[in-house]
Image (cartoon, rainbow over all chains, first blue to last red; front, side, top):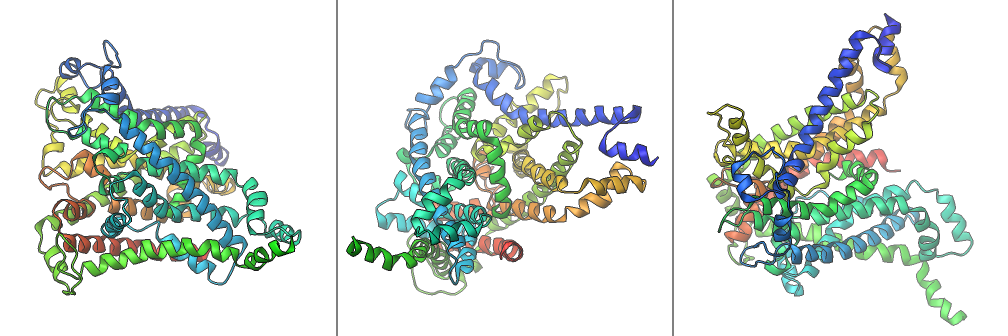
Length: 297
Length: 296
């Protein structure tokens, strides 16, 4: 009994275990279908004509696959009253996400380094207080931030969004770099200090060369978060400066005219493509960000 | 040369603090200062424009007199309990199944987890189409011969909140799977063998030995999911827009609507403060214990 039971957990054998094994793959397969179904429906709908959508089934493959809906979503779908497609808003998102990710990651790296390798009195308290910023429901800062952006002359601009994402991204980037640098031996820093290296020299020549894993995880995580953001986008931008998530929502919820489901789906895929590609290329690092997010949420 | 180095030497010992201070100051201002501002506004009669005259709890009385707020609270309760339960059950099940030494585990795991890379707006758009009463799932199942099948939850005020649960669970259950899988992997193989030698079957081993050992994962998952649920805004906006009517309103959409569409700043601020208080009640004890555990 005991021998068989050990194998039952560690290495299945025997007829009963074969059945269990089949059941196991069956259930796993069902869930693979469950997670892939919406993606399949999106892609296949985006390749169909409107007539085929109205006449056919949600789950059927497109009969004459074509990219007409994609072209329309990209350059001529109507977002509110403007009919330039998703393209200008994609560029807004790119113009927002690149500086916001670079600035928040750089500052987070410096901050995490200073808080762990140059520990001064109050460093832990400062970290704890800053960390709290990663958890607040952003509704609680929307109203004052809207007024502050107005006072700064950044209301309704992509620059304003860069600023907001940098400020509220700092808590996570600091958290991630702090947790990374805390694992780096203090001896290395001490040795560099004895050699006469200063704060920035140690940062650029000792710490950063060790940090690529942390940098990759932080950049990917920040990119995904900021690209996918909707709340700040809808609260702080208007019309021309909307990021792509807001534009997508406007396309889908435009109530005038014929509802073009294929264009909606093509637009949704276009908006999802950058983060999806990052996930496919660098999924491993994305998952590490999620694990760190276990603390952040 | 020495004249140029002197100011640098003078400044060098202060550099760490000089780097941290502005960032810390920004955090104090944009997090704590802004919270204080919102808190204060919630004690005034602010409507379209902020007023700074203290008016006591009037906005909280108004908030708790607003039927729409009760809808939002009830929805938050329904959504968060089902969302958390759904994600946890699916997450644990998939983690245990994936823990059985599957050859293509990496691929399957990647498929389970990809929704986390998507924006909630994309997820909402996709599910809005799948759940479309005319052309979506209802149409498919009618096509299979069930002529009277009805699935109109998306436009049914009593059921619409459950569509948000469906899409939310689809998006986040893979994340919970990943959390639990990492937890299961940290359990020592020797313990599994010992349990097997004692004659415990696989189900009993998981139920009474392994799952209790990964208790911290339950806590993390609970915190993350509760946090996601309270903040859920994007998904509701994309899937139902808070409708039909305001049937799927949640505190986050309520706050947005009162702040930016109805210009009731005071009441919006009061609802934001209620959200913050809820999050603090969940997060702060957790953060405190985490920091004590990981701090030096």
